[in-house]
Length: 296
Image 1 (cartoon, rainbow, N blue to C red):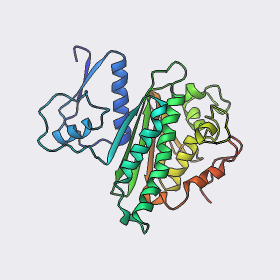
Image 2 (cartoon, rainbow, N blue to C red):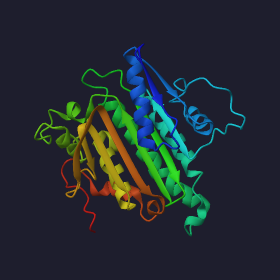
Image 3 (cartoon, helix red, strand yellow):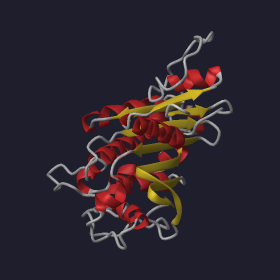
């Protein structure tokens, strides 16, 4: 528009998946940081009410009459923004608990408590690790302003959970540029390297080993998704990879994004078919063992 305001025509928008919703929120934040303005216009009332409840888009949606229908603050889609690593665990656990409440116990023969615990524990782990990873590594190399947007949704059709996280940080290549595993020095190589056990380790491992210290957060999060017969995608710079870290991964070029994007699809029933904590035994010493073989 003439006054340097970006107008987003959302008249035909009916639904937003977790990844593009996080990407939109991150892009709007970048615009605001650079002094720009934006307006999301022509949203249908139910969609507008739903998106405003997500917080991350509040303030961007055009002013309009109040909805006549009651606004429910509980939605199968949960979105949050994290600006501080100290908030990561609380945000992650809150999202995991809310998503688990949508999981009907009749999907399996386990009790309701077991069914939901089987979702909360691995989901909470994944969300915490993804947030901490983004805020720890993304804020290096002159990107101290970086934030992370994370979303999770349960889909009753297919009994699926989708997770997404987007940050506007330095990206995988800048963060891991000097690591020997990143060869050639490209976005594709950096994404693949980030999923190698121990590569993203940024602190020494203490007596109480956690996966962030050991550089296992992305690796184990990927393994949880794939062991549930799900899928993983990762993007940074001009690269987008499906199933990163596996021999049959698929890479393609995209419009460049300064930062990182991660997208996970999880078959909820598959989460309770194995003990996700057993995955850690596959990586007793960071960087010294190969990735999990999914043929066993």
